[in-house]
Image (cartoon, rainbow over the protein chains, first blue to last red):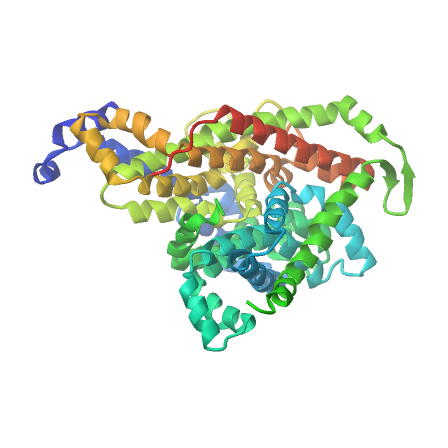
Length: 293
Length: 285
């Protein structure tokens, strides 16, 4: 830290000189940042690299590059443990959760952001209070309900609880965003004969795209990654999402290191690829008050 | 506008219905369950406050609570601390901001389950990555998941997972500070460490407060890391996994619900304390 201080004082006001000097301060800054970057990149590299090795090689040479990649783990993952099916389940369940949350949450957010009415404050307090209810505190009664309605081990059995769990966050983010849309636009649209429904679809939906986008990304991630609900509500292989499969593999094939590495890689790679494309929006979503609501 | 009442109801009702059925009603039902002794759903007997009495004499729950609190200390010190340090550093640099932001955030998008399995591979006694390194350097292998180290071992991925999230929040907060604050500081001749401690950190204090609250409530929800890496054994039981075991594994819904209520109350109390401790004038610019 000391170096950072000095370099800044000496070189502060003159950018031209600054770039030519050797800056021990910023060298250390970059060093620390790079070390942390390495802790996030290397594990992913390690797992992907090892997923192309036979179990024995993972055990004995986990650092060497898989120059001679074997695909056996991947074929085993798809044939033996049916990763493809779990992918499908994950996408269907998390995708539907996102759509439902956007639709229900969007409408509710629109009302809360733009309509003056009695009881609005109460609704907001109830919403904020629900942020304090963790899944642990609802799981038993929800499970009971799902059994009663014969929804355990169905897609809906995960979609509905997850939708409910994510709505608060979604409503707060989207309402916050919609509140910033100018009133004049709404009045103009009303003059043109829009009713509330068309106004939502034709105006608020397209204008709140950033809020909808960041909400959908986070809801998707939370739903896709949620092991707790999946373990309880959808525990049969036919409906099991990818995270439960992963958990299953660790208990069943815990000694097959190649297969385990592959399972992790298979869960992580699609998310990482998507992330690299949308990382900008994720951060934007966070920065646009996603958290403070 | 005319006819708005109809739309208010129509637009709010679906979300309200889903939330009532799957969030609020179950929450109150959990409170109700906590007064019953149950075996599965069908055998249920009212026992008054028995479950709560049991709660206070439950050694395992006490231990789980202590483990959760210990993990919370690591989370507050390291997760929030590292995030803040990284944000300060990235805020200072000129080139590469985007790169570091992208790279630091990326564990956040990965599931806790996948990260946990990764660490299972790291910690494995015989073949794990860590012992592999030790072995090749000529050291003795270490039992990473024994009683004395297991809790720290599961805390590492827990902490690592979310550093990037808080990092981005801090960095955003810093970027919102108007530059005249810094210009004034520069004219006063304030050095950069001082600038960080006297200017940047006080100015983002409300964000730090939000992050601390998120970190506390987040730790109470820890489940996957412990479940996948150690199944709560060797002194790693946290209240989340303990609740799961009581409710779902033992099928003791009554007592499981009581623990769930305890988690909620505990969370509320801890966040109130944190807010009190961090109370300051809100700064607006």
